[in-house]
Amino acid sequence: MPASSETTADWTAVENLADRIGERATLKGWCYNKRGSGGIYFLILRDGTGRVQCIVKEDAVDDASWEAADGARQEASLVVEGTVSEDERAPGGVEVQTERVERVSAVKSQYPITPKEHGVEFLQEHRHLWLRSQRQWAAMRVRNAIQQAIHRFFQERGFIQCDAPILTGNAVEGTSTLFELDYFEDDTAYLTQSGQLYGEAMAMAHGKIYTFGPTFRAEKSSTRRHLTEFWMIEPEMAYFDHEMNIELAEDFVAHVVQTVLAECPDELEALERDLSALRQVEAPFPRLSYTEAVELLKSEATSDLLDARLQSLQDEQQRLENERAENEERRPQAPKGEKREIDAREIEINGRLNEIEKELRNLPDWRRSAREFEWGEDFGGSDETVLTWHFDRPVVVDRFPAEIKAFYMKRDPDDDRLALGMDILAPEGYGEIVGGGERATDLGFLKDQIEKHGLPQEVFEWYLDLRRYGSVPHAGFGLGLERTVAWLCGLDHVRETIPFPRTIGRLHP
RNA sequence: UCCUCGGUAGCUCAGCGGCAGAGCAUGCGACUGUUAAUCGCAUUGUCGCGGGUUCGAAUCCCGCCCGAGGAGCCA
Image (tube, rainbow, N blue to C red):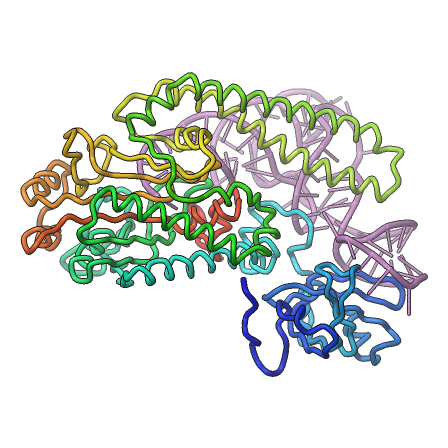
């Protein structure tokens, strides 16, 4: 992100230090880590905008400052005053020659999250503290940049932000995945699973709108792609057809990616994101019809791709096992420091081997799912992943069988079995990030569909009114924020893309 | 709901029928430029819970609880 304005006149943000070489500065933050050697301490201070190394020398500060530095444990809150200097030896090239250290508050007991590895369960239980860690910090900053890019993209194109209600009486896709509330006397209320229907109403009022709000799904899904509470952006445009909708979605996704690349280089580096994959994300994207996608999935090319994947996983497995055996032999004679490195490496190797084993177990199922796929089914998670392996950027898949899509989808005029829906699949296995399409406008057709889907027509009367009073062609789509953040950050689980994730088994913290 | 893997020190893990272990963290000591600093010494346990097999169970068997990610469903 670009340097923020000075937060106040009283102190300086770490992210602005590079512009203040040679000047005195006061920093307010927390002790991230500390190294020492005799009469010198290296305090790594973080303040929410970045991290900087502060050099505290015993003979350069007063006794109280030395004591504060000496007693500072991880996450102690500190105010540091000193002169900003450039130094090759400092991480980031800038450091502070400290003249005064003031302890704001001590750490009462040992801070639970060390700079070492931790397990998922432990980190989830300490999410309120985990957020302070470097990678989590970076991911939240990318999330913020994405949110800003989304607003700018739509605002610059004349869209109005119009938010849909969170409490709704409309069950759009059946009630099984909805959270129910019994507060309203005559009716069951639900937490929304999509703002889409309301978006259509608001598009008829403003032309082009987008909603940006939380969404709730009571699915029993416990995977790296699922949250029970997540955020969705849903633009809806009057007088847009299927083709215009796809083009907008492509431009939109490309814009978000390019904006993050331009604005978050430091964050992406902290996340060790491979940027080359993101740089290629420019519109237009490869396009496949559902029928073509099914053919590709069952093709020889997919089978070869899976073979190659299997081979490379097995090779990696062999390499790691060899390395582990070598280390084990070396360990007894190794000096202590090296021993520690070997132990750390072993944990790394075991973790990776675990992942490889998991994927090797899954691959046969994935292969079967791809080979035995029948036209008319919906793609599973693995099918989407396998499809995206064929391309180096997001893929658009459109014209799905109407039966697997929602009741409000317009039919393909060229083939009545198909709906004018489209999905955009993110590369690298991040799954469906966009889903949308052109909406049906024919009143009779919609009434028919509502009945066929077993939905109660009374609660959709207001929606049908949109077709009774000046109905026009219109289209829209939804983008899942967390999956987009996960993709751009290269995170392997959506739970790290939102400050306090709500998953199937987790309500706290 | 089903399938697979896991639960051992504050944390990350090894041990997989025979004395409960390592690294980190923590405490004390050494070191004036460290980069997850290093070096020396020290402290640390309901081996998830319940039952069974056995001379002997962290280890084998059965049941349960909790976690992970895959199927289904979905953004």
